[in-house]
Image 1 (cartoon, rainbow, N blue to C red):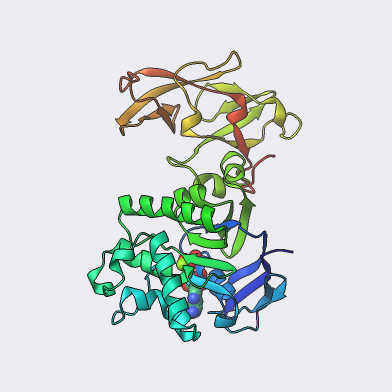
Image 2: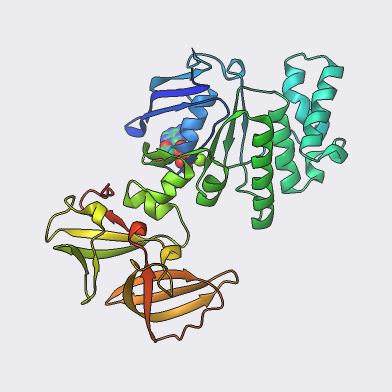
Length: 359
Ligand code: ADP
Ligand code: MG
């Protein structure tokens, strides 16, 4: 039995179809991240799970029971919003305990739960303050605390870190991960940030226009993107996409004389003369041969930028541009010829007509 099952969920607003049939089943303790650009339907799906929006079709099951007709408060879920949604006039203590107070949980039991959550989140010393006397990061912890004390079957998070600055966002992300490892509650977490998705998720659902484009573990999404869309969305700098043409057992790079071997695993899956997109991640490009099977690409350096942990090289192959991330101490001369090497198993191929990966 799944902890949470989303069955063929659809949503239309008038003429606009926002969710086009979403199916996901989660085991207990999974951390599912819904990842996609603004407007793809992430919040709509989360709100339908929470009962804050009504589905136009389909079903939601929690612990095997349909909850699609249940009131939000009867769904055994707790939600954390980007905007925190705290009561400004109540202390942190009462904000955290508010859900319990509404459920008429006795005061001593409530106080115990609030203290426990505050301790986990390291905000014990803030319990008597009002939200206005807290920083953004502290407010978000209070909002998380309010969800924690409910001990729900499922936590829902809608972009909970988006209002924090970069450093705090990273710290809070790590703490969320630690909390999840400790509590092992099932989570559905919405974000447009691919790093958050990669670091937090046990599985990622990459969404596009109200559909799931790919559902998989972070390494499946990163190592075997199912489409150009997923490949371009996960990874920074993004995957290089190079136009090529199949010629026998080689791939000729458009606008240049250069060709690279067609990796053996694609033999028989592509046709002579077919136009393809060769995908290669910037971090898969290297300044030296890593193995006897390494393939070299003749390029010319356009610019190189030292970020600290790495040197990011923008190079040209014919008229096409590609990015390589190499160790920071490499010496690179702008304008010079440079061979960039890669291993054949790091090559991705996509059909530009369908946008899908060649498996
Ligand atoms: P995301 O969270 O991925 O940014 P949303 O789920 O908020 O996306 O929105 C998905 C789409 O549904 C958007 O195109 C949005 O304009 C539309 N939408 C959301 N809520 C409403 C609403 N109440 N009425 C009409 N359209 C809506
Ligand atoms: Mg949203």
